[in-house]
Length: 90
Image 1 (tube, rainbow, N blue to C red):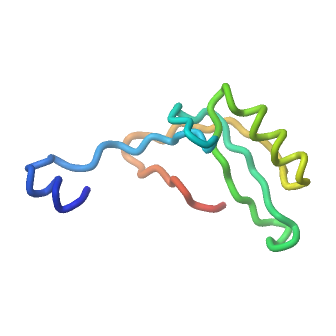
Image 2: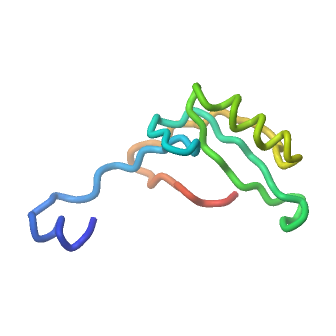
Image 3: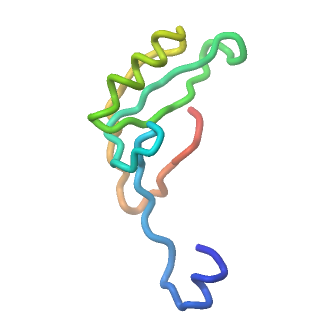
């Protein structure tokens, strides 16, 4: 929410939706691609890219080609009472 939303009387922020990490894709994500860069990250650290069904293979191939991919797991739905941890590292 920003100051203009407050001035317009908006009720509050819309629920966050996890979107695909592929450039220009606005589809809802269904997968988490876990990766790390061994040159700069400790072995246990995992960064996360989100992927829709259409871009899962493309993003996974991109990471595998560079030796960064660790695993792909299904994105579990977050209950409405919990905030969505978008953009956070594991």
